[in-house]
Figure 1 (cartoon, rainbow, N blue to C red):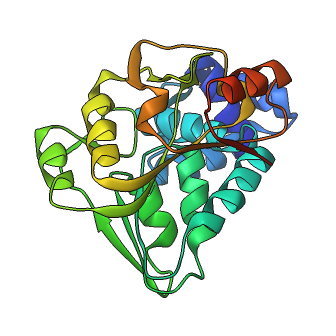
Figure 2: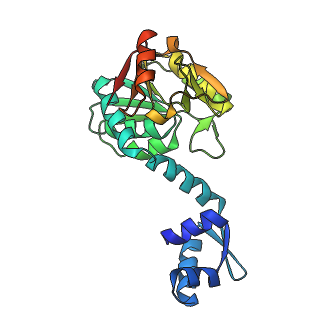
Length: 247
């Protein structure tokens, strides 16, 4: 089934004959597999084959991003939660690294998580000792999180001890960027309502920029990244008095 998903992700539509040939099985076997995927809403049956449902395209892309640099994200998250004390209120930005931070918070006592991310809510909803506040708003197309004026208004009702923020890119001056204009105001409001701000990003995000600048180095207190980060970047950040922890 996973192999069929991957084939559909490449082509969007494929025939039963092609799948049977690729996997060296009968057409009847492929039909049964496609019936199962259709029952889950993952594909749409076509004449003689199947097409990829839009939902699967998004879910697979999100899963791929989660798996990218997963060991580094896990180490970053474990370092991040060392800054968290029991009883604190934590704001979590949307993203796969902050999702890992949420998972590492499981087991803490009386921690409150405030987030726009449905993925984070799903990860911790049954964790004992963690209270979750999901900020309402419009569901952002292509991403499992909320955005819009209602979300921004809701953020202003809360204060947090720490805000953990991700980034699509971080340039040599320590400015952070996102490729999505819709999250810029949300991220800025999270930071303005937090006592401490920590940026969490793996090494591949550095020495780059993206469409929208979100923060300057004065807007956050600390960066946590992994040991793959280029030494020149580390020295450059040190000269600019940007605090950074590497794991």
